[in-house]
Length: 228
Image 1 (cartoon, rainbow, N blue to C red):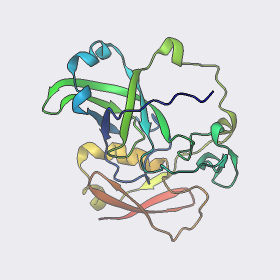
Image 2: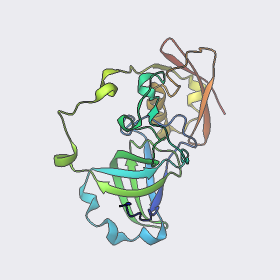
Image 3: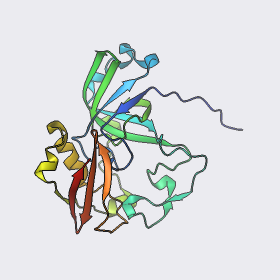
């Protein structure tokens, strides 16, 4: 018997400082200083729908990989955690190239405003989404049920990434708004460049807070070379 399909509604969109996929942290919560907000479609922007949410500290966001939607899928993928050089089963990863392009992120609730001109807005930190990503649902994080201290991370836990040293010239850092600097430094320390590439002359770039951040990476040192 075929499964019954049902329509999935987009309830809102997230607003972040990332204009493209490149540069976005590979997992939620890695850079806790990154701030974002969730705005809701008119149908769902009803204050009563958020009643009681203020009592929770964290939130699950269910969202769509809107920039990775495709008609086909692959049973195996090359996760960045393994350097992009080894294939594993798609269901053993969080790759966007899935049968259904759905993502899951855990974020911290900073504040909730119910009476903005756009209706209720949830301000969060630690999001790993690009600006405009469609939100399919939100659910409160429950520590007694969602936290598993004895969990095993599989191959993901076998690879330890060291943060890189960031060289950010003062004159370039001054071009970034003060309130955005700590978050940007946190993103750079995680080395946004593909880990399977090792080209010290290559200049990488990503959009952040209205700027294009250009950098090189060599011997564990990431150097910002210019900002456009």
